[in-house]
Amino acid sequence: MYDFRNKTAIVTGASSGIGRATAALLAARGARVIAAARNAVELESAAEHARAAGGIVIAQPTDVTDPQQCSTLVQYAVDRFGGVDILINNAGISMRALVLDSEMAVLRRVMEVNFWGTVNCTKAALPLLLASSGGVLVGISSVAGFHGLPARSGYSASKFAMHGFLESIRIEHLNDRLHVLLVAPGFTRSNIRRHALTADGLEQAETPRDEARLMSAERVAAHVLSAIYWKKRNRLISFETQLVALMQRILPHWVDRAIYNSMLREPGSPLQLRSKPD
Image 1 (cartoon, rainbow, N blue to C red):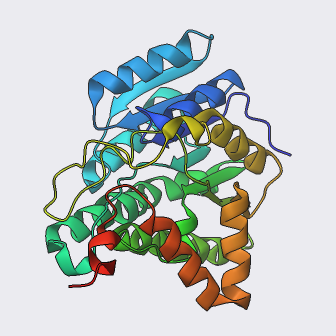
Image 2 (image 1 turned 120 degrees about the horizontal axis):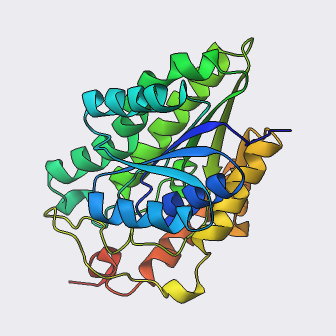
């Protein structure tokens, strides 16, 4: 069981959604949190929100696609608190377009943020996590990391890549005291769909789902900390994610069709144009 008190945690993508909620909950549990994101204004607002409850949260603007900025982020934690005990790789963007229609820059951008952002931060923090008395390395993933999602090809690829990278690190350090955790929430109430890239790289600016009916970021954050506390290997939060992870091993063709139909029903789905007869 893990004691969060006086541990130093870095949370990327902490300006909103899951990252913001996780940073706040870590601080409430007694951790010292370095919150990182590109948007300095929103990041400071998130830090102030967490500090209002008495927690220690420091905003450090960071673009995770830049290895040097990730190194600076980690060094800041060392200079301020003497090390890093927890790294939560949460920064991410999504996309919504068919591969056939997508510009290459869109696919590259999603990989840069979701996969290479994880690599950059992890590479910088790993020596310190290994030196910690109980280092924790977390990747916030998705059902898209277990089964490809249509019109989210770049997003799925980035999450599959994250899984392989973090699982490899887990095995490389089986004999060390490093806890590697992959968390796969279901659809969560956040801004990720509004900021999702379309085929030409523009943000779609609206969400195709009823956000009010989705899982809250606070619920996801509670699952993340629970999985750290109990030293879980994977945490698949929603029933749908658990079902996909199980059924893809048994009836993969059924999973393909179920996912296709689900995505087809989304308002404005790119699949709708492809499914219509000429």
